[in-house]
Each structure stands twice: as structure tokens, then as C-alpha cells.
Image (tube, rainbow, N blue to C red; front, side, top):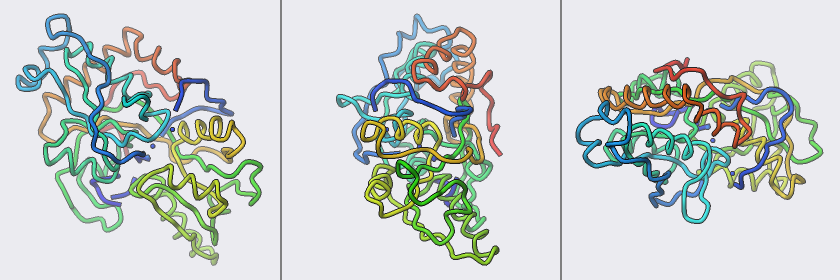
Length: 319
């Protein structure tokens, strides 16, 4: 996995109406979608004069009144398109942050595994895309080769999630653990933590004398889900909130189900370029503010994901 794309953890781990997500067990959210380049505004924010933390922003961003956000906007309920607009957990949090900072968060759609490249090239100033905060991403390390491939990014952590196994309804292949995937076809999104987990499991399969996983990767999660729905794969690995959402909504709840326990729960982070510390610290202050004033909790309640909430916005808290 490349450092430019490590949950949403290789080189998001990350579907569409507001509604309750039926969840058995603890909901700990851990990395995406329509790959057009349309920009989508997450609310209008508030004027700089009315925003209590506007003074913390870099002068150029404060003057522009907008923060461009890279995101793979096809990962309900974290972010997805509805009526030509980005909606979901991340856009709602971004809107609340905008009220604190006096700017508008403008979501720009792109492929997940290219988001860090876009950030470092200046196409975006931040990433919000169910991206897991990992040491490899922080340090610009390719997780497959272990080589330095970039400057890395800083993260403002704002949520916690793990990976889940999604199978066809009724679990016809009897999948309950990662070990059950050995020798079988698994479809998932390329460049995600889920891909990293599958590759690590492949190594274990071989060590245990079993056949390797036939891993099929796709640009978007909906493509992987289609393969599973068609029976062309036995499972899709996905962030728990996304897996639970698909199990609840796809085919009226008749297409998929979540099996087993969550895997490797860790923080989602808002990614900021290394060296852009003033913006990073401003976003951290805004996150702490919405946690303290209750707006953050209301957003998580709206999306039925309160058990993935955090009590403070740590910087680079991932492992």
C-alpha cells in the first residue's frame, strides 16, 4: 500500500439516506465511490466575523473563505452524493467546523488512492474521506515496500472505526473469520486498509499451509459490492459503519450481512500536509470546540454512530 493512499491502510478504508443503522455489538467505525471531479459544498459555514476561531486560520485561507477538501464521495454513510451535493458524517462534521472557523469546506471528489497525492500537489488543503490515521501515512511510507515515497501528512483524529467482513445474506459460504477467506475470492476497494488486512491474511494463509486469497481490487467500493451481490466473491472487507449501512439498506436489507468481529479498530483523521501546522492546529481547535459544545454528538446521533465518537481531537494518534 502506498503512503499516498493508506484505512480509507495500504500505499479509506470507506453508501445513502439518513436512517438508523442496525448494529449488533459495539459500533466502532474504522477505508470510497463515484470518481468524478465535481466539487460539493458541505454547508455554507458562517462569516469570519461571527466565527470564534477564525483568527487561528492562515491568512490566505481566511481571506479566501474556503477550504478545499479531497474526498472519495461514494462511501455512505460517511460521505456520498445526494442531489448533487456531498452528504454524510464527514460533510456534517465539516459544516460544523466551518461555523467555528468562518469558512466553507468545499468537497472535491476523487479516487481514494490519489487523495494524498492531490493534497501534496496543492489541489486540496485537507482530506476528509474515512481515512485511517496510520504511522505509514504520517511518515510517507509505502506500506508494501517499506520505502519512503513522500513527505507524509499530519492527521487531526475525529472518529474511531474498525474493518468488518460483509457477506451475502444468509452467509451461504459460512464465512465468520479472516481464516475462512483462504482459497476464496474476496472483492474490495483498492488502496484501503481493508486491502492491507487482506494481504496480511494472505501471508497467514500461506504460512498455515492453506491456499491464498484470490484478491480482486476495484477503484470503488460499489464495484466490489456488486461482485459480492452477484456471487462472484464470497466477501467484501469494509469499514464497519459502511458494512453495517450496506447490510441495512442494500436490497431492502436482503443482499448482505455483517459477520464476525471488527478488525483492527483505529482512528479516522482529517489529513493536512506536513508543514501546514497553522491549518492543522486551527482544525484541531475547531474539532475540540464542536466536541465541547455538543454539535459533534448531535451529528453522530443523527447517523447512529455514537459509539465511534472521540472525546478529544488528537494529532497523529494512529499507530
